[in-house]
Length: 120
Image (cartoon, rainbow, N blue to C red; front, side, top):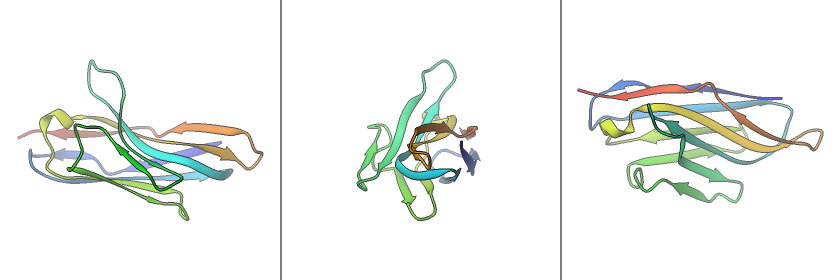
């Protein structure tokens, strides 16, 4: 019903920066929240940053002050600027969006994931 296409990611040295982007398409009536999660090997998927429909933002404690989420409601896109990256940030990053379809049913969609590797 709703497709999320991610871009960005890759290999970066500690202290470097990356930008992830995600675009949502499909029968979207409204999006309540868009955000980013990550899953490191052997760990559960965790919230990284979230932007709600009220323009509120939520960050994991581990990324506060280093990551910034940007959302464009008109374009149904969300981006994540990641600065001062650490090896502990290495993970597969997933875009997520949930909201209402044009038929007024709800949706909760995930992107395919993009690898971020922080290593020297």
